[in-house]
Length: 222
Length: 222
Image (cartoon, rainbow over all chains, first blue to last red; front, side):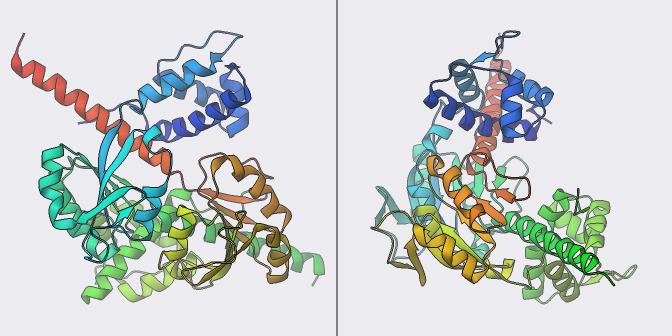
């Protein structure tokens, strides 16, 4: 059953509108049109209008949207004004980076504890967040009603840890491990595919080089 | 001009096939069919076949692909066997995480130097990579013919640093800052949109909760 009729592409664009709007507000701009957002972010204005419509924000013809209202509508739509607690497992480099990243709270998620299998890491504090032995995850997740798990363990441990999270009541996993998790369909999984992203970049650069080389050889003549 | 006729969605799926194939190889599996990959990763088998076709790997009917061959074909297609040097700017939490992340080299990118505007960070070594003052970026990028820039600075500094990168000969930017960079169209930009990803997760969880609440109230009766 589809419980959310909003297209995923819209969900992914809204945060970039949001950050653009925050910058406008900082600069003191009070009004904005869908067309202006479209030009600034390279999205067709009809698409911007459709995206903004899902948030319920009402723009006025020839006037546009109030920047403040639009920011508030997106925050509410994305549930960002309703901060949820999250547990992170894997306090290595990526985990530490996320613990130190500012602003996730503004995006609706507060990391309240971190867990690690290594006794070397457990017991420390990273960016003010305590790192606990991973064995404590199930009991604490249930007692604190935490439903978001952030997975920053190595690929080979990810499936096992994800299953432990789900068994502990976690409903949504933000996965940084480069594997496709095999979990019940009821679990929400959002992958941050760093390798895929790097793959796209590498490939585009290779194609660019090949076409530049072909152009040069045409210019040089036969 | 489109220089690459391969759909972006294919480029994004290939790394997940690749990591799945690596796991199969570790387990000792020698042959794999597009159908099996599809079932394991939740992609329709006709799509898997189309995706694999772009790499030039030839499967045999009723036998499938050799796992080794397929891994090699994807590596070559994504240009991952041709490692490019990259410079990273912003040696904060996210930058440090990327410097410590293993396996980017296998994905075709080697971070050879990091740069930071803060004198506190410049001069240090992080994960064996030297952190240099950001002023040294232009000269070094040109001398070392580095064309990939990794941007892990705060949002407010990102546009300026990206422009400096482009002026220094950088052709492709892997952007972790939550802003839409305004750069010449010739520059390849690949965004890692952590906030968008978190936005999708938050929204799905909110929708899930609302529908669960609605279900409960129906069950409880009027």
